[in-house]
Image (cartoon, rainbow, N blue to C red; front, side, top):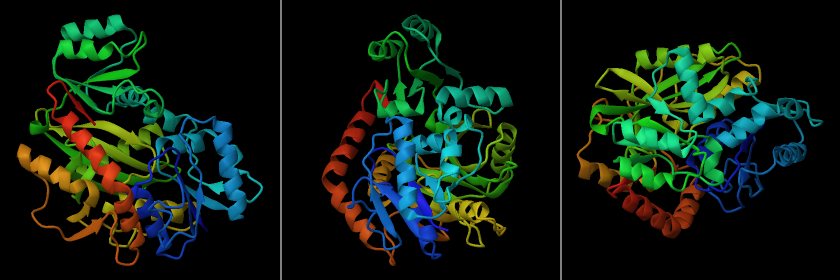
Length: 409
């Protein structure tokens, strides 16, 4: 049964999509993908059966996006497993399950999650509320409803604080802040808030100092009973921008306590499907604090594979097509590197002197995000598209990251 990579928005250099195409394609599964155009790394992979160029922004009318998916499904012509790579795709699939599942070509296959749950999990406010409801620790947070609320917060809060867009989809429209923004002073907060309007679309959180914290990730696939069929834990060594962005290098590290915490939370909220969690371990109080819940495949999912050859995408495909998922321990000590962002991340971390205590001293193996001996074209297309605009973007992030007032993701 084929797989279809579903993405909405303009981000052609997505290594997670290439990883999913390779993971299933190497097993002989026909792979299809929605791409920005025919010249993206995913579109040129030798393991891709066909690309469907479809430029989108992620803010189109849901009916338009559903009809577009159905049109692609008819061109594939048989039942197909959907693999979302962003929150917009995961939410759309969850909220329009009947139309997508009962299509005339045999329909799409995807986990039968509660329709409203992915949108709530992708929301910073919704996630914080779920953490409070179920007793999972997350950073102390406030969602101001007015400028007056911001002023009251500024007068009493302990700085620095972190500001994030409250809803996941704001980044596609008019984001209040550019990703994760550290604000060092009350005056800095009030100045930034001038552009937020009368109803600020932000969540303000406590700042967890990097010197006292470690960044951990959990990737897993859960069945219809919210039981894990594949569950992996790892630690971030570097991210870009530093300490606030996407994974640049990470290691597989066995963490039974974290695995149990994640599994219990998923069971309590009743989620089914693939997850990508970001947590920060706060050494000051010894607690893991949930920062992000991505209700879909994470870009660095290929860091994790069990000894039986299972990653979360393979687990999902096996389960949705009615086959058992082989058990197996994760490959401890394995390393994942995203080549185009790890070099600037390495230089930034070397400058700061930060070292992740739980990172192994030596890797048992390395998975590169782009370079693969059996699939070389994606890395060349990545370099061609990355060199000029990508380098300019990295410089802008670096410059912003070094400003005194804010730190931007």
